[in-house]
Length: 141
Image 1 (cartoon, one colour):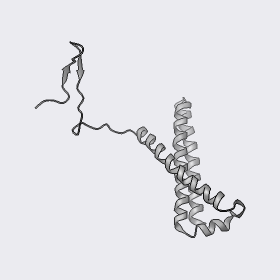
Image 2 (cartoon, one colour):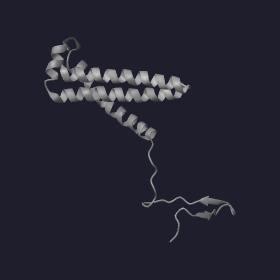
Image 3 (tube, one colour):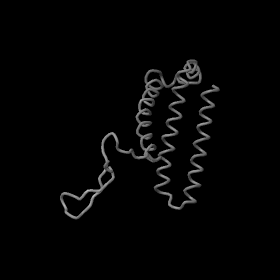
Image 4 (tube, helix red, strand yellow):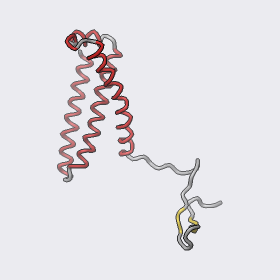
């Protein structure tokens, strides 16, 4: 049996040995890092947020008159639980998307580890408080 990780001499340069990388169905998969999933989340949440925000904007500002948007309008709309789920999804995705973007910015621009930790703690704490307040409003209204 041949070793798929064995080395073979290069055809173009005699004497230089290049590693052979396995390909195909038997090839080992790379482990995905947190940053890879974070990058993927930003793309997916951005796409979903685009549609959620456009629907929210259309209902609040185009279909209904802005002047008529008051607490009674929200109460009538939230009589249907699907609207509560819609608004909570918009809240949760927007906060998570923004928090992830801020995390990247903090990692890029705050150089000192202690300052970075404190900045992240403040931002994460504020985001958590806003999420709890928004969730409470949507559930208890």
